[in-house]
Length: 353
Image 1: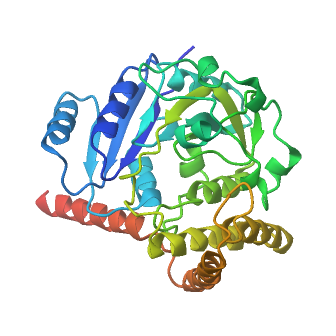
Image 2: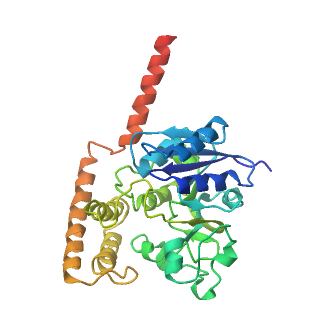
């Protein structure tokens, strides 16, 4: 049976050694047909990383695209526009990937109802919090990563398919059974190419900062295609969650991060949810992230609660302003910028002919 070509898209910003390690793991995949696209938003790399990327590009092992802006959804859209594969796989620039990850993703697409695959993510931060895992090299198998059966999940609860509150019940770390899910993790998710070409879906570039919830927004809109998202625990990798770098190097303590965090949650809700679902989402968002109740476990200091409540209100107003602006501006800034550049190149090519 012919193996479909997989385009592995890696947006990167401000990462050095983790990016090099990630590329080494992808290059070791035992899948026979794949390409690697690095959408590089880093203004200046360290000499070692620069030389490494140049070498891989010269040898044809990666396709290396340099852009002069930083946006995670923008980088994803850019990569899709350059990709050739029938399957598009997105990973982060700070992951450890076992050799069979691509093969596991591809194995699910024989099912005609599957339009996307959510891979399992062994998140270093979440797993070490529960004390059931330690990250290290060489990469262990999935069984040894979660040896404690106390934390393993067979079937996700019904709430995990409720678009209003699913985000507090989807656990793609400890779930061990393949099943349908409502959303994927952005650091390990794949899609049929026709999701982008036939149905015209794009990642919404109005999701700002760390772009939290941009993949959730995309997955909610994917429902309109009739395809489902299938979770495969065998398509796993380790997400290191490096403290610096990523698509935007914004401190979680910064005012900008706090504002964009709430803006993105409200934007996802306003775009995709019914009024009833929105109310459930906003209620849980307030209870968890403002009041600090489980599973957030934030400080109960009155000053901090009032501060977080202020960002919550500003985020809601900001998201409403974003939607109002969309009446005349789609917000797809980087996709439009790339399209205009391509048009200029084609026009210049015709003039030369």
